[in-house]
Length: 458
Image 1 (spheres, rainbow, N blue to C red):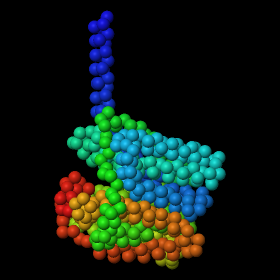
Image 2 (cartoon, rainbow, N blue to C red):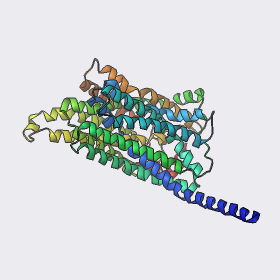
Image 3 (cartoon, rainbow, N blue to C red):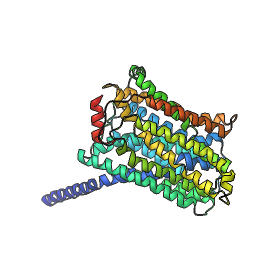
Image 4 (cartoon, rainbow, N blue to C red):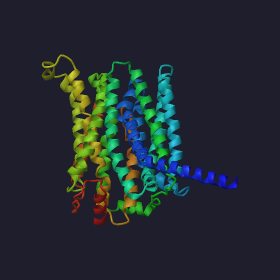
């Protein structure tokens, strides 16, 4: 009996090993699907178009309209600092990911409950649950996003990890466009607004829950130590601020953030000044997604071989064009030039919604240059301090939408938009004053070779 029992144990271990090897073969696919589903949920929970519109049309205050964008910006700006500080408690990425994912699950279930009970909740209670769930979910997903690179690198060999990163970017870009198409279909379906909101929120909740499940499935049993360095000291952070090129960079970023502070109120201006119909919300969402996708595909190769300040100039230019278009459309719609050619405001509302593609182009262009520019202007070893200083400044100016909400008590929204356009124009001028590096990276921005060349040139 003993040999047979021993043989049974050997067979059992062999089956277990085969099962784990089989699971590990699907781990790269799980990691890729995680990114795609998170991008899908992020597109459906777009804070400056969908969530800001929900807050406004449900009778929320200006602060509630601004809360979603503020939470998204501040959470992602402070996430690197939070991850660095967490190294004092644990060096295991999987522990941080598990805790943050559980917080995200609880948050999205709160959003799902609010959506499911939308017909029975007061508007005040519904917005409280939606804002609270969104804020917690953004903080949790920001931490997961910071840890994801370490998790993938610790779970897979180098060549597999590179393939996972590449496929994740491709699928996430496509998922963002799918989210825009879904939003367009839902809001243009003719359903009552509350029913459309319920569908959008429940779809986003399902996407996040599925993404969390796939995130856990990509674990292969290998330890995943954090790849973050310790938080830079205050002298390192202040030392980066003493560099003139970095101060110019911060000045540009602050001006652009001041122009972006009105983002959650752009769609509100459409409702107030143009009489924008709810059915065009989906078109606006799709336009943002399409602009971002086009930028994600075009900018990396278009910027290859150009200086690191080029993406900042494009971001400011698109931002300025967006604000001027948003302010101009209501005036065009009321002019004789328009009324002589169109019987109603359909064309104006469609043009207003399509103009949000400039928002996607601006955000994709700005995000393409941050790390590259910092590498070009900092000395070896000074990059962590400069990055942390930039994140801290962005976290502070990320509260700009709440400041705009406060100013709207005394200033009209149209004047605030004109003020934001002035800030965008100043940002465009400031982008021209940024240091132009002599380095010309011949590989697409964001590629492995571009990063190595930029690092070697510092």
